[in-house]
Image 1: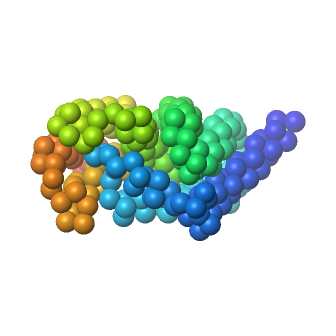
Image 2: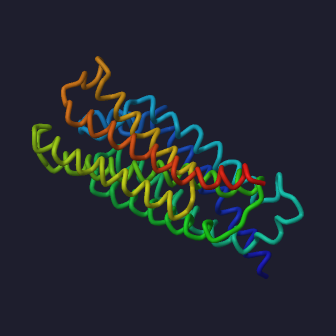
Length: 267
């Protein structure tokens, strides 16, 4: 009976994953409500949004999550895979919920129900936090790290940043500021808080992939602020503190990684 339940969960995981990818693809191909996902973002300009190229990470996320979806069915698994059935069930339920929230987010976003999109984004974030907590308590082989932990590390890292961006978009949608000095002040706080969250979570889970995604997002923010085609350096304070945040993230990764490197070199 437990095997039947596990198989049903795996099928639901696959179905919701495919639905998520399909809706996200159609969101820009149709596009839904006559506007692209990036078009909605552009209609609510805020200082935290990264350069468009940064969003290419979704391609990597989809590929890695596809790998996990296939892996749970036994593809690429070793004999140890059967021992992970309880993990697949617990992670699978949360992943399926996050996938549903993901494609519902698309509809809320494209129909400019920004408050509702924020709720769905928080649901995704909470699911990924719970998954990360579960995975951090496990010991994985190299193959399991690639097919189980890495997909959710990358996804969690990006959703961490995306949630902050969704919050800033919501504030813009309700008329919070007009990108003046007050906005730059709050942007500095948001940048530092985001970096602190990334560092603390990276330290808690010893998850370097998660930290790399935060770095990628912050590099995208910096790129948008210095690009002549975007903000073109209009907000120097934001540029300075984005660089400060990047330096803090890099230093945190170095100090967290160094003991692991030193231990490996002593073997």
